[in-house]
View 1 (tube, rainbow, N blue to C red):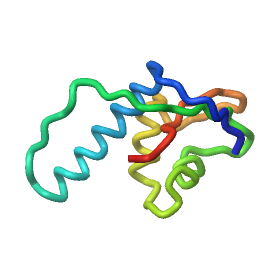
View 2 (cartoon, rainbow, N blue to C red):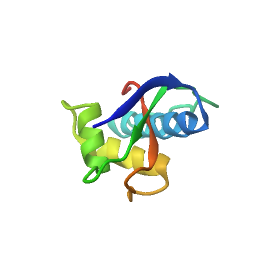
View 3 (cartoon, helix red, strand yellow):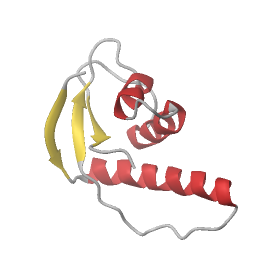
View 4 (spheres, rainbow, N blue to C red):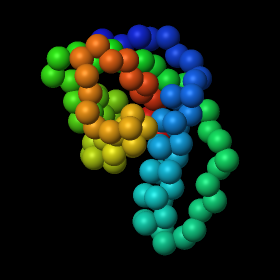
Length: 99
């Protein structure tokens, strides 16, 4: 996996952060049954990945957090990306760290 190690806060980062925040809140709420306030805006450092032949969101999610079930992260990446389809050469934003 080839990634650009430069991190920055951008619109794509905000989309990724929002998707991850909503995912974390949904998981937390379903586990506790309590309601949780959603923060107005969250900024997160992102790194960019240039899609290579054979890359999938599943592979990227597994590489970001190898010890976790990749399904929630795949869902968040797909939501932030606007779908699960990737094109070779496309540059996509990934969180620099996983919450």
